[in-house]
Image 1 (tube, one colour):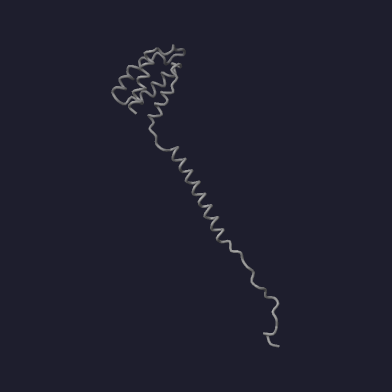
Image 2 (cartoon, rainbow, N blue to C red):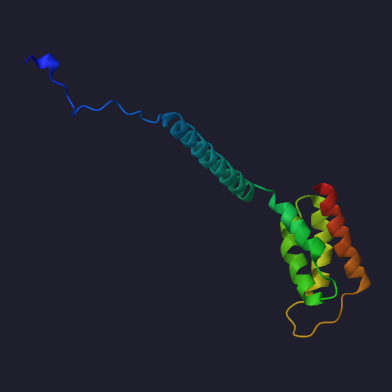
Length: 133
């Protein structure tokens, strides 16, 4: 018998192999885009929190929010932020007239309410600071 006449029974036909590499590539690209977008959002939020802002704007907001009914606290706030905001001659002059008026509202346990003239000086100073910024 010749070898060509013998049937070979142990060799099986080739099986089809599913081609999923394109799907893996698409998933990999999608995950990459999502990670990139998440990183950009994180950087945007970090930048918004840490960007440099003018501190004078924050000081002026604190002076605006100041409660004039609490005379002692108002005197301390005006003294602290007023000294920081008095940059030109006019504001320094107003502040130099205002600080002696505020002395009687500080360093005491019980203080009287702010008088009208002191309130006017405080409001004038705040308006001058708003105009300068």
